[in-house]
Image (cartoon, rainbow, N blue to C red; front, side):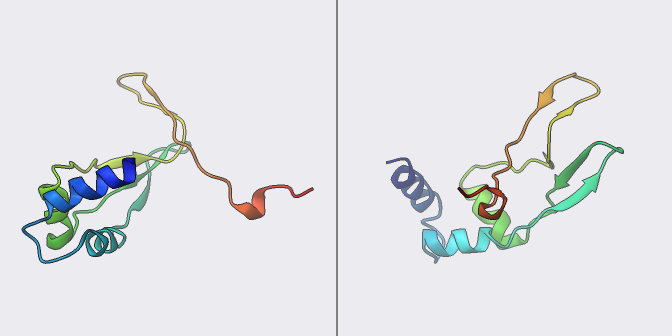
Length: 97
């Protein structure tokens, strides 16, 4: 149900564009990040300025892009807020019995 609602939201947001939701998502898949090392123990992924067509998709869907995405548990110096991200294990990393 959630995926249906997301598709409907994107379809309504992107209705002025000459593309399907699937085509829009394929464009979004080309957006990349750049890993930035902030400190010896802290790194993050920076999202560079997206191309005009990708930026338009985010703007029409009213989705703001963050500048940085943390890569692992860090403590922010100013706020002392802990940010934890989950990393899924690859199938090859799992033990088979």
